[in-house]
Image 1 (tube, rainbow, N blue to C red):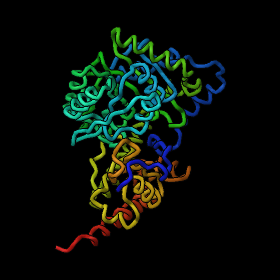
Image 2: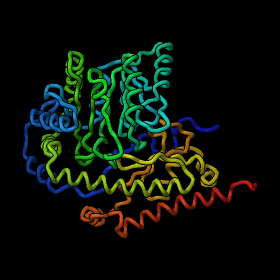
Image 3: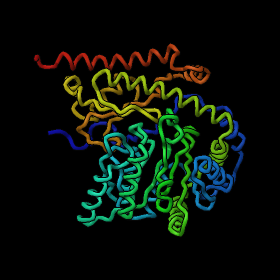
Length: 415
C-alpha cells in the first residue's frame, strides 16, 4: 500500500520557496536599501503612507485603483494570508495544486483547507462544478466555508487562467457567498502579454475580492520580505481591513524600514526596475519553454508555462522507468530528481497534490548558474539562454529526461 503522507521520509517541514529570478541584485535597489539602513524608527503596522501610496500607484497602472486607506503592507504574503484567514473565520478552500504556503496558515489557525480540482486548461482557479460540490459537501458535514484563495498567474502550475474559466469560478464563489483572496504575486511575470490575457478577480467581483501580491514575485529579492494587500471598497472591505490590521498588530508584523524604502522604489516602477523585470521575464520564458520541451519529449505531461519561473510536470507516464530507481511517490520523485538535476525539485505533495502522483515543480533560476560570476554574465547578456554555462545546464536536464524516456521505451511490453 502506498504512503499517504511523507512523515519520516524526507524534510517534511521543507517549504518550497518562491522561485527567484536567479539574477544578481539590481544595483539601484541595493543603493536605496543602503541609504535607508540608518532608519531607526519602526515602520507602522500595515505600512507607512509612502509605501501605501506607492502600492496604490502600482495597482492604478493595472486598472485596479485603490485608496491608501484600503491598502496594507506586511513582511511577506504569508503574514497577510494568515491575517486574512484569522479575520474572516470559517473554513478555507484552495485549488489542487496550490502555492505551498497557502495551506499551512489555515492549519496553524486550526482551520481545514479543502482542496478543489482545477479545470483541464489551467491551475490556480477551481473548476466551478467541483467548487459547488465541495462547498455543498463541507456544509453538509457541518463545516463553514468562507474563504477561497486563488491565483490567475499560478504557482506551481505556471499557467494563466483564461478569463472565461476565471469568470465561471468567481461567479460560483459569489453565488455561495465566499470571500476571495486573489494571489497576484506572479502577475508581472506573464511570458507573452500580447497572447495571454490576465484579468484580476477584483475586476469581476470588486466588492468581495482582496488582492494580495508578494513583491518577491517580480520586484524584490525573496530575502527582503514585503507584500501588499488591496481591500475592496464599501463597508465590508473597510471592516475586513480593520480586522486584518488588528491581527498584524497582534503579530507585530511590520515591514523592516530599509525594505520598505526598497519596496517604495520598486512599486514606483522606475526604468531600472521595469527593464530588469522585462529582462527576467524574457529570460525565464525562454528557459521554461526549453524545459517544457525536454519534459514533453521524454513522454511526461506538462501544461505550457505562461508565467513565472517554473514548470509543473506530471511524470506518471514514466512510472515504469522511475520504479527501478525506488521512485513510487512524489517524495521519492523529489529526492531522485533533486539529486539527478543538482537543483531542488519539490514534489507535488508540497503543493497539496496527491502524494501518490508523480508530479514535480521545476524552477528555471538554477539553470542560470550557481556562482555570482555566472549570474552576473546572465544579467549582462541580451540572450543569457545562449551562454555556454546555461546551455550546459539545459543539456544536463535534457539528458536526465532523455534517459527516463529511453528506460521507459525499453520496458514497454512487446506488441
